[in-house]
Length: 440
Image (cartoon, rainbow, N blue to C red):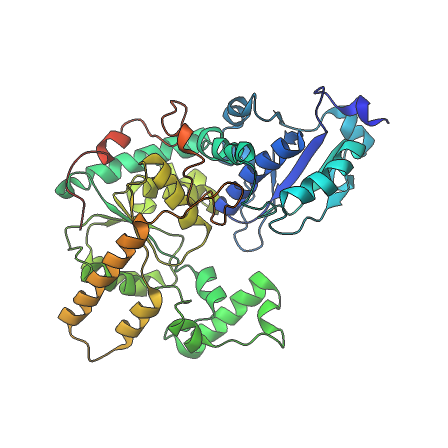
């Protein structure tokens, strides 16, 4: 079959299929990059497929996470998007997408690679598939292609109705429970789930039983990756280098040292905490007004989300988005995307605390330090975090080195006042933009 007979949109180069892998925000990155690549290649984008991750095991697909019609409609005029390949193409490949030749594209591939290597193949074949597709496009792209990332991220991607409905309820309930601080609350992204503890290869005082449990989990999730001969595991070194996930009590001590008292309302964005019965009790004593999606939602409301880690993460993401202060403790795609969204939504005036974990570990291990001295150090750390938070990396034309998803300005600025922004919940944005004194 000739290529021209399978292309529905005149002038397009062909169809682009991508497989998005990873968790919630790695998939989001892949989607936005796919829109950019489709624009670059003048391709018709097929709604991306989500790969089943061996660790998170969430079978959710695009339509479970996002509003498909909203996505397609908001990209009209920029990139053509279809739900699936037309029948003529499927017939050509025996109705099996895996029969379509898959291109292995290097990470952070530059624009000239797509134009010089990928585009001729697309023109010749009429359809290409790129899997996996995480981080397969450089951040350094022409302005009109960068704008496509902005449109995808801030206009086209809208959480599905079940997610957005419950998320808005959780935000409203969190505001209601934060009456002592004028409806403002602190969100803490705590990465102390079992998979994170296992992957870090750090030690948390559980002795041989903990070691056996973590060894078993690592083998189940990563199939021998941590048993290779060239793999050297040094838990103590990981800790002093700030690579270990902070425990709930360590986060609590840090926040109390920074001046947040026990009247502070805190939303804990997290999966299932490792040994929660042991680790969460001290944090609750320090911050009794601590809430989670499980405590804010009813069992019936949360039941449809159980077993779907990405959908649960989307709830955490939304509640954290509208917090007065966001605290990140481990890095990763979740905080990087969230910080970018908050910068976009609140015009760059969204407070984020990024602790100096190397310094924090040294202080926490100092058994001789007084509480006053610790608090003084935390005040300095907070001031430094604030200073860095106000710094905006310089972005030169065709020479962006930072992530557009973490630092969306200036390229995305033209969308900030758009009535179609998918980030604003009905009644929450005005509350958080009020002129009440910033929380401490």
